[in-house]
Length: 414
Ligand code: FDA
Image 1: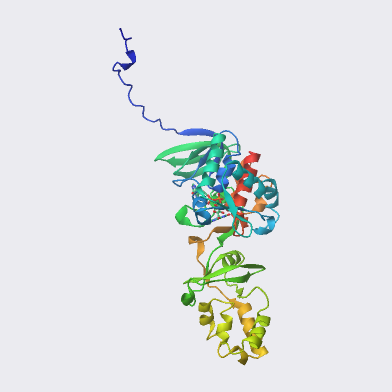
Image 2: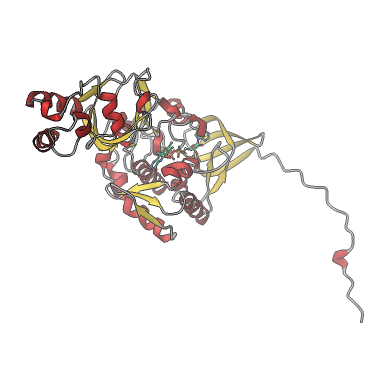
């Protein structure tokens, strides 16, 4: 049998290996700075010709670590009342047009299993990575490109398009974009790549910025007074400013943490006091009076041990003179004790700051943005979304909901 001549196997002279051409210019319709929650959501809706750039090694790093690795991706009860902003009305339109129900439908569409933990907080059953994979799949569906490890340089605007200098793999690329979406988050957790670049871009375009500060952050006291209690948790009502939160508190070496304290921290300003009610449920006075009648011989500390952790009772023993049996306590003494436990006023010296803060309060002033599109009123094609805007949610899935809603609003407008 004669075999056909296998021309294609003949040694061929190889063409010299193509040296990647230095791409000095690239045109896109939309450039999104930041591949976090808001940026990826926006990219999935911004239409063709979208490029997302991020200086991190991976997209959605905060999603990955959120909710203890399970991502508290939204909250059943999300409403404008759960957000802090100089203009409490600003978030209404985006939250209504792309709500928690819309995001849950997307999660279901991708067959991601989830559950409600508490207080309407929805978490992935398996891993936060499911949410990142979902957003990446949505981006792929519309052909959005992602460039990681890309550093943003100079940004210019010639009236009709933006020119953004990018450095990737040591090579510079000048991007020409009709729309520029700023989705680079706040200043929280610099170790994870937070830079505050969004505020600088706002300033570059003369947009006002509400002074950023750490939110959802543990409070500190400048001394180690709570060191003996470190690790002790108890339910409490924590009040700061006009807000009160009933959840757990946690004593730390440096001060106070736990969900109720984190929530209150977003309403706390340097120099302010906070108030702790250590027995927010039911009437403590009636309970103590009942105990005095039925268990008069019990030590006061033993009785208090029924409603407070033992370590906390020990800690308070000297300050509140917790001596003798409950039968020895007059009504007036019990009243004073209740007041001390239910109205414990403390003045934190500060907070743990951006190092551990879950969010950054403040940001691009909403007066400068359209609440419908997130577009800057004074610069056509410029958008700010997510955490870099002066809209900050409570703890419990609200911040991601804001990222989804604002990202969607900008993407739809583009
Ligand atoms: P995000 O910070 O997600 O993304 C910004 C992106 O921009 C990042 O990828 C960053 O690398 C990039 N970037 C920054 N500067 C850049 C620069 N100069 N150049 C290029 N790229 C740059 N919320 C919630 O609702 N449920 C939860 O369970 C949690 N859990 C949680 C845990 C922890 C530890 C933290 C720190 C935060 C949370 N949050 C949360 C808050 C939530 O993570 C946050 O509100 C959103 O990620 C904000 O989304 P953005 O897309 O706006 O910013």
